Length: 285
Image (cartoon, rainbow, N blue to C red; front, side, top):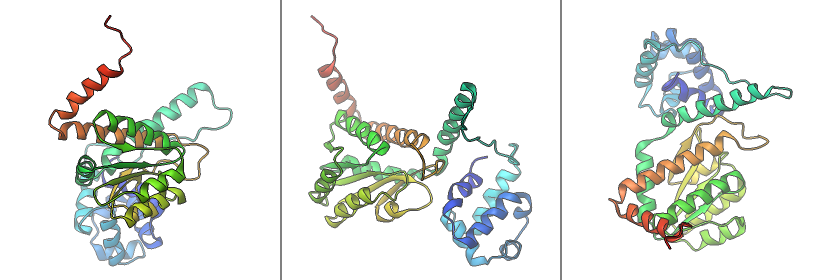
């Protein structure tokens, strides 16, 4: 199941109580929902037309009519939308086969959901901002720091001046030095990391653009950012270690990297070849 039902599930944990009632009804009674007018849906879900419109807008639709139309497309499509394969949690005592299948299924589900949550126009504007920036500072800690390191290396290969340090205090210092000509790219799956948010706030004080790469649904970091690039909300915020969230962020970095390549009209490609030749460990002698 993709499209609006997938989006509803992504937003579900962060919805207001009234919006959640509507979402639960749409997910549990999709065929019935298609037949309902907004006032009827409000009655069935024990909410209000205003709450339905808020939910539709939160999902990216202009109103209930557009949301209803997209629900109808999925309900009457040839795909089986009745049930979505559940991904069982990895448990103590699971066999190697269980672990392999569980992780692969979870990762596949997340990757397949990325096109559903990415906004192409926002992504385009964010990439344009990165290309045009004088300096690019990257922020992230833990697993998000690993992604920031990967992004810094990719940007450097493209001839873009990008800075990343593991020291979060230095990330704050670097953000303090940014100007309106610069950009901060902040990585945080939860979007609630106090340290990364501090970096973003310092960048905003200097009128630098802030790009957030974070989970869908809204959070503190996305409210600060000029552009929010969303990844699927398929991993608990309170987790023992990042798994699919890191993979989602890395995939988004690869997408941005490819878009920069296509947007620089071959200039970056020439530089990639030069940098490859310069660091090649294969001797021609």
